[in-house]
Length: 570
Image (tube, rainbow, N blue to C red; front, side, top):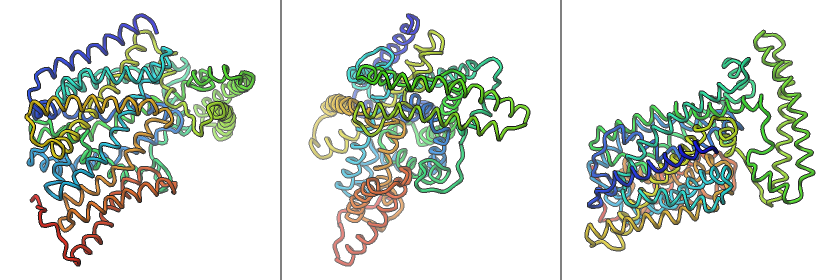
């Protein structure tokens, strides 16, 4: 990195941290600290929701995901807009009417304390682990570029977020997320433009699109129904709908964002705008990855995008094998250049396309075999079962080919995205812990000042926990998939509890509590024993809660054991 890159990076990060501390400097009580006094307008609610959802994982791993697997991941979000409509009609007015701090408070008024505690616990487990993954994502940026230890980089990133999250609470988080998202979206737009501009002068944008299409990187829609296929339109519409319902309706990291809206209308507008903007934003990020793939068809890519792993192979006695594989790639890349140019000319002339495409795919297959052999060497060296470099694809491209100044900005963007999502997650973990556990169960009769102090210490505690998780997150493969897979194991069950609470009045606390436990155990068993794509666990978990709860409720009625203390919120 140049001096200009360093200047841009340090100035951007310093601005955000100082701005966050300044914005949250006047917290007087828990409502200020946890909900920003319920005073935020819709546009801040919207960008805060997006900022919490769009972590560094989005901007690091999504381009790499498209580079390796095409753009079909965008189908993951197809159920989101419909979920936003449903939640705006149902959940938002209920939460505002009850004046709750967390989504799980409602469950006690509808069911009982143990059901509220179960849902809160499931949330704390998955969100605490996911936050650690979000801290790890930018650590691979700095460790790769600067040669820093990944472990110490995780610690540094966690501390930067804690500086303003602990001091400023929700208001600091929300206002910094507004600024962060503006910088992030602007920077990514510039990066996308330059990616296309860096293609050879004789290659038009139309040529790039045709090549990406022939390489199956523009595979946005897959209509084939296959429960074992991670990304198709059915898993996106159905599984994504259930995931979005749970994430935005029952996950405090998102519920807390729109509970801070100044009115029901402002919260609804924030949710709906998120549903409208999210798919185009994700499409654009994945499209950048597809264009990076095309770029690396004309410029020889590295054997492995994580150069640290390649250096380790040389240091551990694999130099001869690596050099042989490098020679193979060099030879194949020259053949690929000829095949690629032939294919582009064939597509321009609309003659001999099929034959040219077959030759191109054959050479690409041989190139991929070389990458597979490199991956196998790394597995052998590290004695692990899974190795990926998709998280490094966009990073490698940025640092090698983008101009000075913009490199620093894009690294800052990755860090800002991490800080944004981690700050929102820590804030939600604190809200749930202080309201649903500490105040409700452990210490119910303290002063507001004591609870405010406890909230800050709890934020520190969750920050430390997330940093520890981050130190081990490198074993998870592509981080974008990993964090969504983890959420899908829990979100369906949490959603099932809330659907029973909102819509199925005949199911009471005993039935939904034990139905949820049985459903969660079943989801874990299915995950370990079957190849079902992870998005479907959101549907399965939700439906299983209801399926298990109904017979338990009937048995309870027959046994004459009903919970007399339950009340139903009309």
